[in-house]
Length: 189
Image (tube, rainbow, N blue to C red; front, side, top):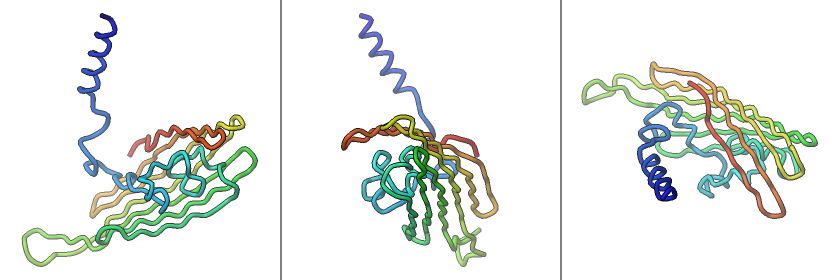
């Protein structure tokens, strides 16, 4: 009886709860949902447990000390009409410590201003920016934890906003298996 009650309670509670908002693109900083790196995008962004380059700043800061060397990652993506994504990230390893920095910028140019049908009155650009600094520490031989701090900025037409965000990640690697847990985009705008 108790088991059935618990199952019914959990089902009713999960049906009635809403985790975030009413859909993608209906709140600010939607650009944080865009991915970076060709490999990560090709994998559908299921990348938090395999990233071993500068994209670890975005996907999992606990992976900054993975891989064999320091590196720099550059990305330019001209996605939909007039939308460009730019990313530069770097990671550096020092014994059990990993340090990463990243800059992610999206831009939409030439958005037309209209008050009535006809010729546009003027044009403006929409810009989004995320400046990231990450630290990773290897607690044990196979277990790492990481933290990313983000400075965020968004401007569209006359409206602009800035704030901060955090990512917290863990990674456990054993043989050819890697398990990760990441909480992304925690913070305030």
